[in-house]
Structure formats: structure tokens, C-alpha cells
Length: 199
Image (cartoon, rainbow, N blue to C red; front, side, top):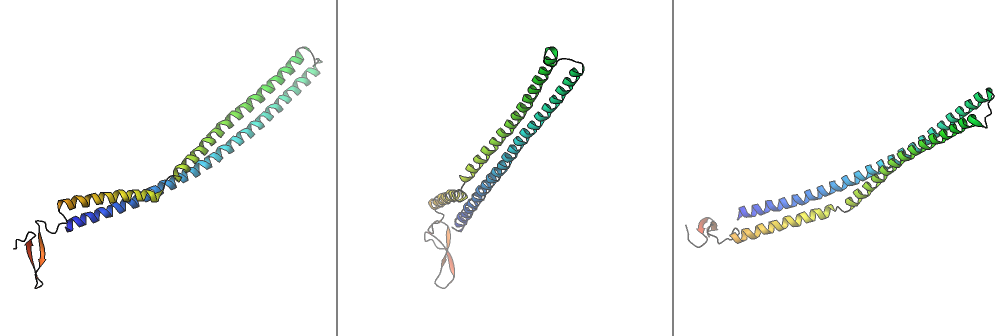
């Protein structure tokens, strides 16, 4: 009987230990998900900063391109005027018009590149925000107390099942065929079979 009781006691301790472990694991997972969500929020803010910096750089590059084009047109006009060429007609007008067209093409290309790069950063930022939302939603669904309770109930069911099997096998039966200690009236004990066959 003592062996059966000890086995059930150890199994009970194991069930309690598993419940504590389940609580710890659930708490750790919840904390980890919340931490990941915080990191994703930081990454989303960084992506937005990169997008804004890219657009600002694009604006500066476009302005620089327009300034260079304006300087080129001034040089062209001055050169043609010094040679006595009429700037409003013929090939002189075509050259100046071509310079203006190239200026606009360069400006548009720089702005398009900046917008495209910023869009990439903002898409990445949106992904990070979604990741943070998912992590927090998953974390909010984790209940360490419920995990521990579920584990404890499962362990208790196993202990009860073991107790029932041991009971059916007679492990707790004082009248089994095993010898038990029986106290005599004088304070000593004698070994007797449970069925009454004395020794």
C-alpha cells in the first residue's frame, strides 16, 4: 500500500509541476509576443522616417537638377547671343526647348524614383504594423492561468486513473493476500495473513 501511495503522491507532484511549467511557458510566450510587437512598432516608425527622408532627398535632387538646367540654359543663351543668333527662332529656339524638356524629364525621373523608394519603405512599415497587431492579438489570447489549470486538470485525471487501476488491482486493500502487521494486545506485533492464517 505504501508503494502505491508513494507512486500516486509522486504523480500528483508531477501534475503540479507540469501545471507550474505550463503557466511559465504561457507567460514567457505572451511576454515574447508583446516584445516582438514593440520591436515591430519601432521598425514601422523607422520605415516611415526612411520614407520621409527619401522624399526629402528626392526634392533636393530635383531642385539641384533644375538649378543645373537653368545654368545650362543661361550658358546657352549667353553663347548664342554673343554670336548674334536670334534666340526665338530656328535651331537656337530648338536647343533651348530641348534643354527645358530634358530638365523636366530629369526632374520627373528623380521624383518618381524617390516616390517609388518611399512607397517601398511605407509598404514595409505597414507590414511591421500588421505584424505588431498580430503579435498583440496572439498574446492577448494566451492565458497563463488557463494553461496551468488545463495542465492540472489533465494531470489530476491521470492521477485518478492510476488510483482507480491500483484500487482495482487491490493495492489499497488491507485484506489482500500480502502479510500485514497486526498488533497484539501486549503491544508487540505478529505477522498474519489477511485471510486469518496466522504465523
